[in-house]
Amino acid sequence: MTAIVARYSRTAILLHWVIALLILANVALGLLFESFGEDNIRPLIDMHKSIGITVLGLAIMRLLWRATHVPPALPDEYKPWEKIASKAAHVFLYVIIFAMPISGWLHDSAWKAAPEVKMYWFGLFEWPRIGWIMNMDPAVKESLHGLFGEVHESLALILYLLVFLHVAGALKHQFLDKHSELQRMWP
Image (cartoon, rainbow, N blue to C red; front, top):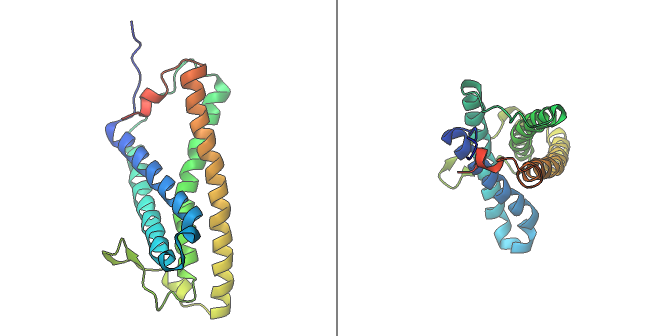
């Protein structure tokens, strides 16, 4: 007899996988910008920004969904430390999923050419930059551009670690512990 697996809702599953795939696409873009040649860098950076803003919007939707829909409980077989680690990893993932696009948006808004080079969401409509940053003194703005860029890159490293831990934990439960972990979030 097969045990019933407590699954996430279809909406939660869809948001999880769309956000995950967009993050993977953005990581690839961020790491490969320069390998596509100088003529392609600006369109790839614009794509990176559009994906980041999309992730931010979807993360807001996911957080609202999570606030109004109780996720399935973790299996009883999980050890107490595993339940705590799972919850902590999810909280940190949410923080990073919000912090990454916000830090990128701050970084982009502090770019010295931001007033002249408009930002478009997938080429469809102009996406606003953060006005109070764009209107700062150029020297301060340049300093913030560097700072926000460093924050964005540091958050990316933390994201890589959290994604690794998240995937490793799911695979451990699925294959070593023989729990039906992947079925909880698999489409």
